[in-house]
Length: 119
Image (cartoon, rainbow, N blue to C red; front, side, top):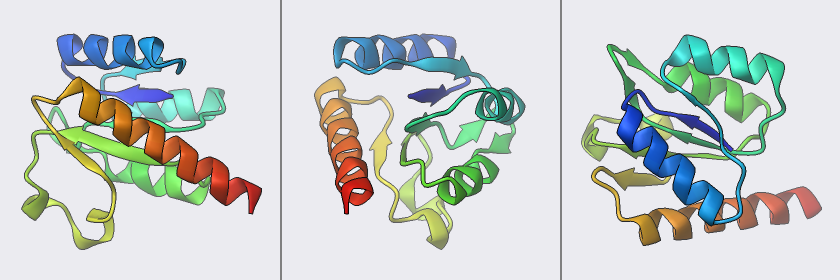
């Protein structure tokens, strides 16, 4: 699962949660360019994205993930009212995040993706 987060401590916490939950973290990528490089080099099954990466938004990555049918969710301090309409249906876990809430959202996202692939 690709982790795209520019805060080193938060990225480490997300990666640790992924490992404890049985997922294999990829990255973390600290920005759009680093994440794009990973996406070109590896097959990604899902992603956890911070919306604001330095001074750039992650939305170009979202467009690529959607084209490749890769599920993703946001872990961000960006208020939901600031998210463009085209991304408002994407699950948003607010920072500082609750680990149990993030784990449930990840499990739900992966289960829905598996069900869609089986259909």
